[in-house]
Length: 283
Image 1 (cartoon, rainbow, N blue to C red):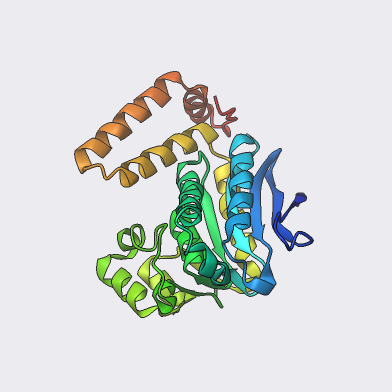
Image 2 (image 1 turned 60 degrees about the horizontal axis):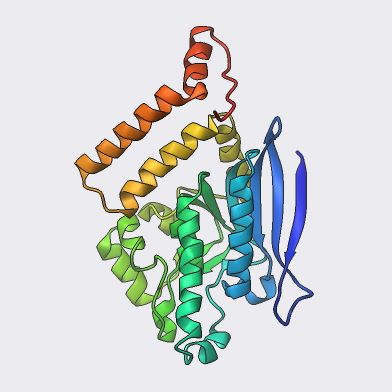
């Protein structure tokens, strides 16, 4: 297995720490999974402004790289992400200029996650609260380590979710369960979140990355152009609140254009007829 690693350093007063580990892990011939590891384990990987900036840059870089087919997001240490840095919030939330800017910047990063051309899978390795939960719900889906603990937690400290805990979560697990999770601040086990449909799979802690890479290998064998179009149709309809008919129309139009203009579509059919493995180019 080939792994290419680089580190994105922080730009604040803890600049000696390596904020985000950025890796490309081979999942096939010249194709990779982009692995992002939030790397402030001593602070439970807070989703503060430097982390948001680092994630934004890394996500943008991976999306522009045609050899990266899937993005895997995880955390170092005992937490995936325990949310924002509440100590910094004391001053920031008193500033009517700074706080709205912070929230808008965060929203742009989460929107980027939903609008990329490549699937994003959160690998929930530990405690996942508040902003960590919002990273999860803005991903395509998540796998969880058996020891993970997942919940909202905003209301415990007089806060409110601002990037999906209130708007996306009800669509994933239903309004009643979302209300219970948000209002109680309870942390659920990995198995409980699987039963709710919040995570797609629960695996042993030491098998979490491999589970993500197994999914990435399957996607790497597909047409990246078809994957991007399929992701667009699913996410665009959900985000814009399309009714059934409008969503079906979007699917029809996008699929028709892809089939008529894509070399990959023709290659797939030709390979099927010739009983061979397709060789997709992303065209």
